[in-house]
Image 1 (cartoon, rainbow, N blue to C red):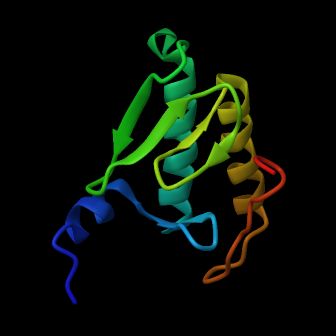
Image 2 (cartoon, helix red, strand yellow; image 1 turned 135 degrees about the vertical axis):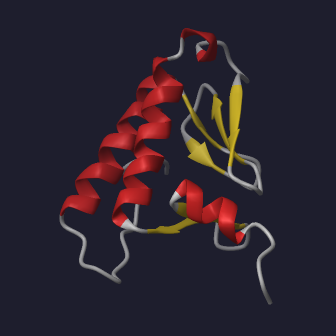
Image 3 (cartoon, rainbow, N blue to C red; image 1 turned 30 degrees about the horizontal axis):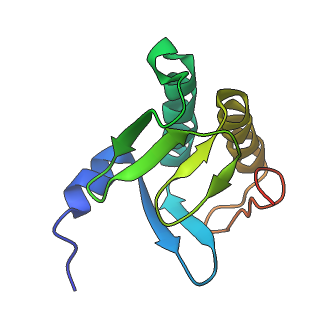
Amino acid sequence: MVDPFEDDWRELGFYCNHDTAGRKYHLVGSCSGLMRFAQLLRTYVSDPRNEMQSEHEHYGPYGLEVMTWPTAGMDDHSIHGPLPRLAELAAIVERKLATANPGGSIVIREEFSE
């Protein structure tokens, strides 16, 4: 099946999909695309308008949502947390990508959310 938003994802550089049963997000993309995800997080965190609880931004054709929230986590609605924890997630992604192999996977779990 052809994804009608494939060009939008290609422009963004990564694809995001939430596995509700497995309680995890899958971010798939090139190294530069996933670094762009980290940069999106940093940009979100640096915007003073996002300091209030429930502030959020949507990214990509399916509406990946990053949201300011008291506790860090990921669910079928968003990747969320207090701004310092979202900044930490950006740093975790960058660190993991620095040692990732082409075609490989990185896993982020307890480093961000229990």
